[in-house]
Image 1 (cartoon, rainbow, N blue to C red):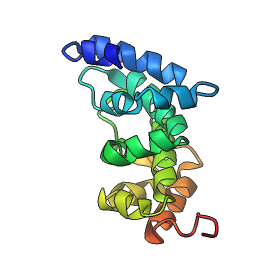
Image 2: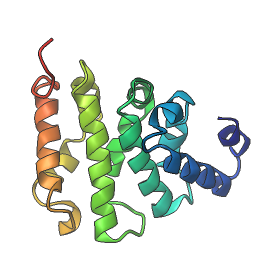
Image 3: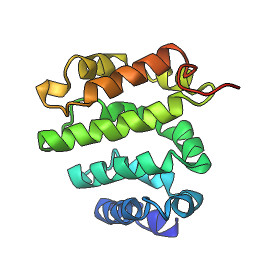
Image 4: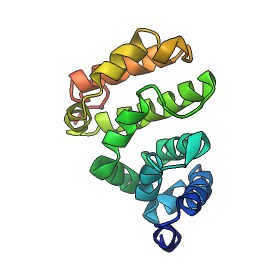
Length: 171
């Protein structure tokens, strides 16, 4: 991604590139976006200084699509687990409660997809998402969560406790 490398010193340009890539990630472009090595750019945008809520939410939604590809899963396993776990924490970004819940749901979906891969549960569990999962299962961050956050968080906790074996099909 030449555009991402060219904007390395300009956070606003990085945010703009991340938003374009995020908008291209949904089907039917998911495989092509993943093959273009954009997943690391989107992972990096999760902690982009000055990126803001729009960039973070768009990148998280895009990663939910990209984790469905082999290249996206590999890139997320290599460098995206800890940033996704950080998304489960209450955000310092100014977000509406519904946006915060959507951010949590995207992060949970990515982590769950990684956790059900062989050995993935151990990799996700090593990033120590337990406190955040417990908070989400008990009712979300600060009481502002979507109704389906607790069950999704519980499903991820179960996948981690069984190293994903509960969610994989037969070998």
